[in-house]
Image (cartoon, helix red, strand yellow):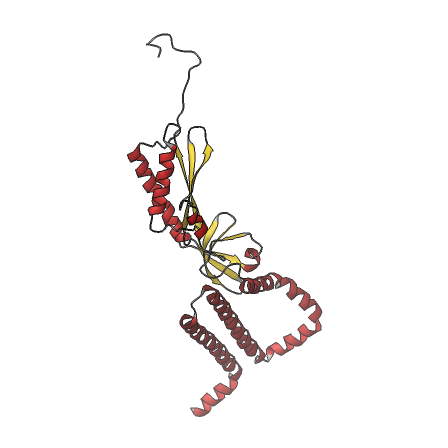
Length: 290
């Protein structure tokens, strides 16, 4: 029985060796990823460091798989002849591989530039192409993952996103200004409407005071409200509302618009809505015709 198993192992030594190498490679890659994640959780407090660690994590896994699979192929004797044949056409092969891997290498190089120069980092809120918005969730060797506000993942190759014009809400300064635009009728009290808008923005708990000390000394208002347009049927007023970041700014804008509407209803300030006047080319001559 022992001799039988010994002969079996001898006969299938190469497949067994290759299988063991692949299993060990997968195990080492998963173990290193788990240990690295634990290290990141215990040692990362800033989003910039998290971005660097995430990129290193993906790079480490890729290197482990490349080394393991290369070593497995090296232990397959039948591939030696293929390798020798490939050497004869090494020049053509190099050109073919170059064209085939051009996009992949472009993604890797773009990913390196993203990690080095940091136009965005993990947890930044970015907007691109006017309709793609979300929070950066991951940056890998190949692509960037963005989680939009519907909890969907937008996966963009690094070579594509590195050439896009981005709006980063967290770059350098995370403060956000929301424009509170409200239209009132021409017969409404403009001064009272401006006062209500300023009070509602100022009284909101998420509203920030961004005035400098000299502005406060000079009596500058905490919330600026201006008349910005005379439209066909309304007067447009704009208030500037500041919050510490994009999520607070969105909540602030929604709450303030609601409270302004309620205050306007109480104070008798009218928010106009579209109206049309219909005139007849031939006026009716009698009550029956009308």
